[in-house]
Length: 320
Image (cartoon, rainbow, N blue to C red; front, top):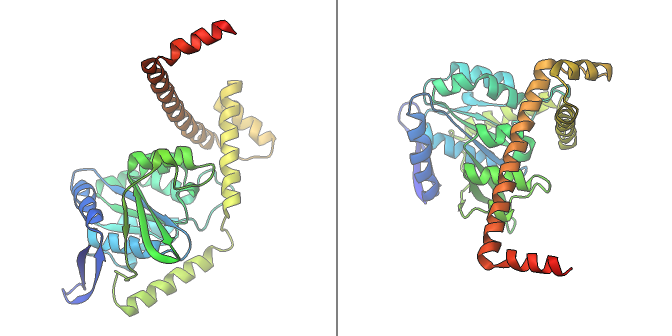
């Protein structure tokens, strides 16, 4: 553990907290150095069950990388996130807390997915460090989760105690999304990570008054989103709909224009641009899955050949 001290804007000591040494080293080498390079940003997901402490850990990480981080750059809606990105200075951190609130049931992509795409250039030009805090990475658009984010930090409880996390790097995160999606598991053998650690419940952004203001801001944001909030079932239905759109267009060899007309006749007002995004997204996902399956099959056949099992199988096949 490494001790991190938090000062106010005038340099006066406020509090201190511990951060895992390995996590600190990765933040130093793979985040701070990256956002100091030209046209590089860094987006990290922090997920976990309600009350697990994911916001606490996100603030500790954000404050370490960017000592100027304060509750003004902790946001709860797409509009506030957009405003924070446009106002941010080079190298600053923004925390999108409780990202999956305020869904629109008519949208094929969630607001956070769309706002990340639309603001990607500004985020890179400003070298921003963005932390997205949400219940589970499986709610995030798969393409966005795999390719637009650098890492996943999953926060969990162990023996009813809070303050534990696992870190999945970009490679492990992709495998987790591809193979753990059906069961929403974080323990798939292909994505298993040894990068684990502890953290403790210190509010890193300021004193007790700042923490109180943060809780008021969070409560108001969550209350305002209740009318439009989507539950996980609704999110899953949107994903299934998008997948069916892609599969139908691919198998029936329809154009985007034909798909738009067909869907409108069925009462689904989905624009040509949305259809294009949906199909491109799933095409890339299927391409990745196909490549992985092909490589795994090649490895399996190579291994069988090394063991002489291919010859044995041929002989047995001839006998039958």
